[in-house]
Each structure stands twice: as structure tokens, then as C-alpha cells.
Length: 204
Image (cartoon, rainbow, N blue to C red; front, side, top):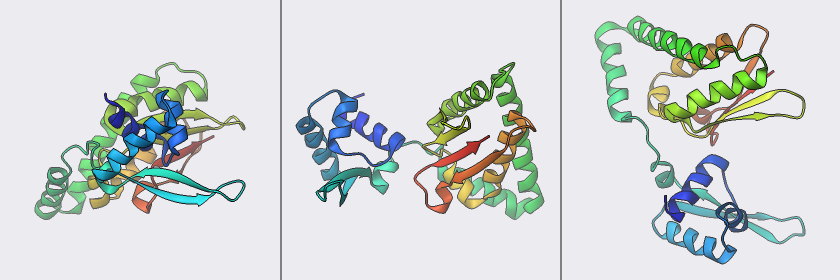
């Protein structure tokens, strides 16, 4: 992976960043990072915004553009949306619900297998995040100071399908709740379809 691709990956995973922060992640000089960012800007993959700093000096943060986000896979979005539309047209909304239920069952079985005998909430969420990451969600698990967990998904490989049928998102939330157990509460606190950069789940 070249430096430009690494920058795109960091911006996708971590959101808007300064050139200095990216330089630290890349272990290179700020000038080198800025040069890479300018090249990516020329290609239309990144853009910047200035915001107020601690002492009044503007801070420039770089972010992915729509073209930059499009560099990440979406699992043949057009075909997926078309298939959902065909199922709905030919067999009705009930058939779409059965399709979602079948996918839900398969996902639940796979996640239960990954979580296995994990004892703690941290272990369970980490296992779930690993499974989602392998599916292309660029997922991470984070232990918070209050003991709760944060499951973050920096990319949605089924975003087009979810936009076409938002029950896919409801289904995923239900699966997370079941595989993590009745003593756990899962709440989606950020949602890409609502305009957020990522999907994030608070788990207590």
C-alpha cells in the first residue's frame, strides 16, 4: 500500500485529520504528508476545511470527498439494489422480509460461532468487531472509561442495499443484541444513512 492509499485508509477509519496528525501516523514529516494530500486533492479524493484552533489560529483538517469514499468497495451496489427491487416487484414486500430474515439467521449463527465462549463484554464485542471487519465494515471495538463498549464501523459495504431497504439496518441491530446477550443493551448512536461519517453502537 503506497502512502496515498494509506492516507485514504486513515481518513476513512479515523475521520478528518490534520496533516500533522497524518504525518505522525505515517511516520514521516508534515511537509511530506501535505505533499501527498495535495496530490490526492488534485485527484478529487480529499478536501480540506479550516476551523478555529485553541489560540484562534485556524486548523486545517483533511477529509475524504465523495470520490474518495467511492474508492472503498460496496459489494456491487447496483446489482444488489436491482435484485432487491426485483424481489419486491415479483414477490412483494413479504418476500423481501423473508430474504432479510434468512440473512439475519446466517449472520447470527456466524457471529455466535466467532464469539464462542468469550466471557467478558469486551471479549464479545472484540470478536464481533473482528467478524464485521472481515466482512468489509472496517470495524473496531473500543473500551470506554465507564466500562461500556463502542463498536465502530467506518465503512458500510451494503450501504446501497440498506438505503434501498432500511430493514437491513434494523436487522443488524437486532442480531447484535441477540448475539451479545439479553443482559446487554445495544444502541446505535451514529448512522451513515442519517448522514454520519460512520455507524457506531454503544454497548452496555
